[in-house]
Picture 1 (tube, rainbow, N blue to C red):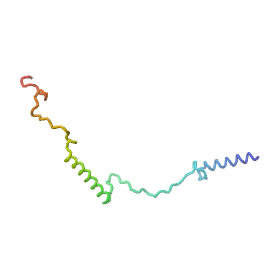
Picture 2: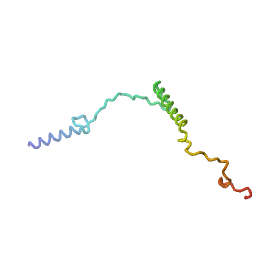
Picture 3: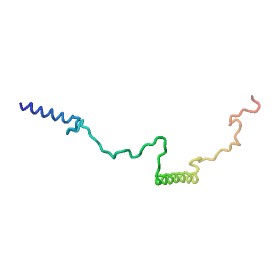
Picture 4: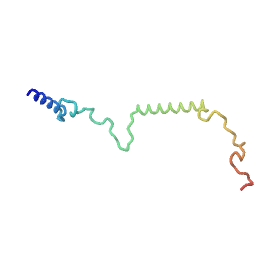
Length: 106
């Protein structure tokens, strides 16, 4: 009879652990998570987001610095973009080099 009581207690504990009614067990119990409530940024369909003045200033500063960096390095190191070798003089190329047939051929 003692074995039946032990098995009964084990079954009741198992049912309590698996219960969806909020038993003491971790598995299967429904937990409610209380977050901060509503959405922080309300989605706006097909509308631009409203930026703060600090965001606009930060974006202006970063974009200004980016263009300064590009133009500074283009001015002081143009070979990085244009190449390290002088451009060939295209007026000295022959018609054969350019793939132009002679005037007498048709």
